[in-house]
Length: 398
Ligand SMILES: Cc1ncc(COP(=O)(O)O)c(C=O)c1O
Image 1 (cartoon, protein in one colour):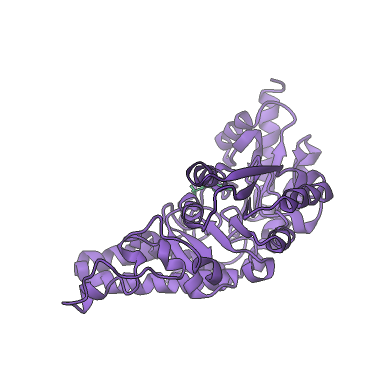
Image 2: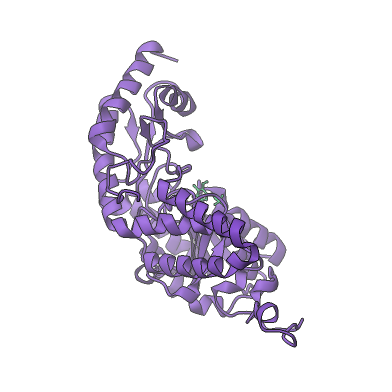
């Protein structure tokens, strides 16, 4: 029997080598309950083969229900997709475009929510407008004015990350959806840098589509993510990318045939439209265990725990000459602390800290600290400070 998860307690990660693991914005290590859940799935497969299929299907239905409850959506609005990029791609390819439609993208964003729209622009004759994402951090009013200016010229989709991957800036989703909806546009969000640790409410924030891989803040494994599609948006989509599971009653001919195999069946009119083929049963066995932990702890509690950790860490780093890129007010904050180091570049620091047992990541020239619910400030801050001080002492200037 595994111990119950507790904020700040990493007992459920017995193999984790780092003294302070602060790279959840890159990849989460698997917890003991996750490993037990994957083992149970593989045991069932090893024992029963195809007889384990029904159990895996039921597990995926539970995963959908849990994801829906985490973001305040309904079950039929959740599709299981392998990663963020494919989730966004499904929306970009299936959207009911007209040539000349415009998409608003944000400069400096992670490409997962940019490339699919650029491909859609090339294929469907769309125009792209850009606003600088970091303006939302440095000058929120000018940022919204720039968005207003684009919307005034007409736009069909506003595509944004919930959280910027390098600065950790939480984007003003509600303000963006209000502006998008006023001109009849949809708000499509890349949610991977928040979902699981930052509270999400797609209803409150007016989000129309929300895609997230499962291997960061959801603490699942790679290849098992999700896509939320608001019911009325799903009904307008065209099945440009579709497979056998995109149809109504896709399993009928396998389970209740004969006479049910047909090649002119209708397509689903809910999020399931995008689930064209067999998903990763092991991946969703992992995700269910992780969702149980996160929902049990409460995402709002995880968020508060991580931000208390980041308050202490930020102060210690600023004292040591690091420049914090954290948002000035609580609404701009996620669970990521991006910093610009005082000496050397971010990859140098990330390596030096890793050598001293502090795991960070360094995307786009930013040294990124990303703790999650098992991290404990009192235990780990001395390790981080020692690592920073000793790296600096041994190599004082570039
Ligand atoms: C904002 C953001 N979106 C998407 C991804 C990854 O996309 P995918 O799930 O398609 O691999 C990352 C990081 O890997 C990211 O930081």
